[in-house]
Structures are given as C-alpha cells and as structure tokens.
Length: 190
Image 1: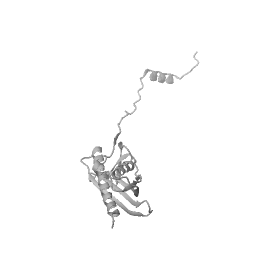
Image 2: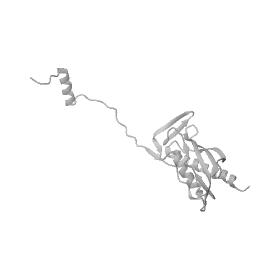
Image 3: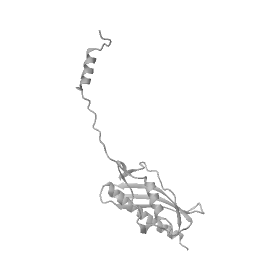
Image 4: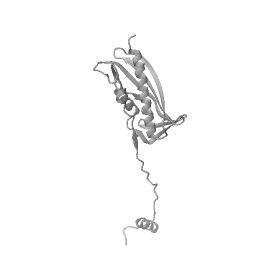
C-alpha cells in the first residue's frame, strides 16, 4: 500500500503534465529596441558671446521627461521606444552654455534661465515646436532685465524620429540666435 493516495483524476493530470501533453500558450514576447536621439551641437561660428553669462540649468515639467512627445490637436502621445538621450532641459542647458561662452576671459555679469513649455512634434503641421520662457537679469540685481517667451516651429522632413531630432536642433539654434539678439539690444550702451 502506498503512503500517498491521490485520486485517479489528480494522478492522470500529473501524468499528462509530466508527459508534456498539456500545452500552455503564453503570449509571444516582443522585444523592441529603444533608440535614443540628441540635439546636434552648435557649429563653431555660433559659439561665443562678448560678455560673461551664467546659464542656469533649464527647467521643464513635461510629463514624459526623456520620451519623445507628439501632439495632434489636444491629444499628446508619448513614444515608448524612441527617447531623447538626455532630458530636453539638460540638452538645452548644454547648447546654451556652449552658445554663451565669452569670447574673452571676463567675469560673469549676466544670468539667463529658461523654462521649457513645449518640446514636441506637431503631427498636424509636421513641425518640431519649441517654446521657452526666458528670464534675463544682471548678477547685481534680482529684478529681471526682461522676461520673454519665444516659440519656434521648424518643419520636419518626414515623420521619423531622426527628422524630429533634426528639426528640434534647428529650432533650438533659432532660439539661441533670437535670445542673443534680444540680450545684445538690452546691454548695448544707450
């Protein structure tokens, strides 16, 4: 007599499982590679500024930090497997710091900060849209010299993430040129 008593049904089920006759269909696992993108560095001729400028780290409270955002009307879609290599705030901080390196050794006299309000691909207009609120001030005074919100839209070649990254690089360069002009108008002797 056996110590273990299994009902016949349980014994048959165990036998079938052991024999491999019962097949469990699990969903097929999809492996998707994550691709990362970055903004292009500024060309050498766009680097430099005549006076010392402290560029504070940019700020963004976007819902998807590193993920690429696509807007269609009021709907915002996040790309799960296509991401920025750094957060948009870190990428813009890096670009602006390279754009405002003083052309000669000088003390910092001014401060620039930026808050990113929009860093997205617009599906309806096929553009990369960049909106940033800038605060420009002197280091000696707490009150800002000016506060400006700039919006730039650059046409994308197609709907690919590569075209989005390229158009966003161009949008960032345009904003750098615009903010440099605004600053130079403010600091020139009157």
